[in-house]
Amino acid sequence: MNEYDVLIAGSGVAGLYAALNFAPEVRVLVLSKRELTLCNSFLAQGGIAAVVDKTNDDYRLHIADTLIAGGYKNDLRSLEILVNEGPEDVLRLGKEMGVNFDRDEAQHISMTLEGGHSRRRILHHKDSTGREITQKLLSAAQSKPNIDFLENTYLASLTPADGGFWAGLLMNGEHRYLSCSYCILCTGGIGRVYPYTTNSAIATGDGITLAYELGARIKNLHLVQFHPTAFAAKHGRERFLISEAVRGEGAVLLNCKGERFMQGYDERGELAPRDVVSRCIIKESIRTGSEDFYLDITHRGEEFIRQRFPMIYERCLEEGVDITRDRIPVFPCQHYLMGGIDVNVYGDTTVDRLYAAGECSHTGVHGLNRLASNSLLEALVFARRCTYDISRRMRHEDSGVTATQPPAPSGKRVLAQGHRTAIRRIMQRAWFVTPDYQAVQEGLAEATAIIEKLKGDDYTLTPDYIEAKSIATVCTLLLNEVVEKNNLSK
Image (cartoon, rainbow, N blue to C red):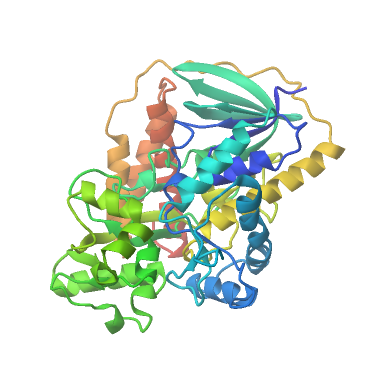
């Protein structure tokens, strides 16, 4: 008998929804690297896309929009599952979890429009949908006696054994092992591989690195989405997002001269898919010789703006920008990862008993570029499908790690600073909106030397070491993919 039936690494929407979908007799442990609410899910603003209005929308339209945004490189089977099963999961959030989606005067769910969508199908809670969903899922999960939580706990290692895994945990500087029958990685994206990102501080690719070290197939890490409208702050690495929904409600993009320019590049204008808008901004930046760009929604009026976008309004005020009167300074930055740990339609990886869901996974639903507000939907649908497969296996398989636990880590050297900064510099130069293939080759050589040093020297196991190794691993895997796909010499 293992200490837990299922270990879930990550307390975002994917991790929490997976935990809630297990039967009451299944013993579940949810790990959070920092506090429980520090995750990318919590930061999601715009909403969640789903065909819940069958009168004015259709599953086939949602599939078509996702295919267009993804360059028709989407996995069609996974996409059909996402779009057809997703509405039930989304409506369940309101009915069973108490998620308070915005409603109109007739008390119908209010839906907005975002870039790349042909219909209004984005359910939302003001401009803090991710926070609302995460808080309600967390409250529900904390009420379940079969679900335990550990905060400020790093999943430092996973050692396969017959019947499950030995999981090495690092908590407040102390290392310990526990056993589990199955593990679901819901560790989020790779934003902190870049100097500027909309991601939270936990997004260092730890789950992808763990899966890779176990031999899992990692696919399409080079498919990185750069959001076109991150707030162009003067200081700090974390860029808060100016949601796609702001453009969906009529905001226009302006260049340094205060001129609209998107129609000159794409007939869809400001509502073109994210990758298109980001590339157009870079082209316009080169044309004008300036990186000054603005989003302007002032014409919608103060009452509408403060009611519809209260969080963005308050956050911009903190930066000295009143969005009811002022233009919002914006510029593209890293936002999302379409690739990751390759999984089947039940979240199963190529490593036995190891599953993955959410942004760290690669289901193939997004293709080359994620359609706005499909991320929370993917997290729900495929996290639930992980639980189906694990529950099925639990009915038919014996579980219980019988092997003795591995030896405790015994590193002696303290990791010096600077490795993460070097990786971020490499990534921003080599693999931003417009790639630099010479920088890719040079960066791969430098990143490879860094990862060899991190793995070769006898370093003490610390949070800094875990994260430095993770972002260096992700960087080398990603750039190596680019080299191989473009037939570049290493």
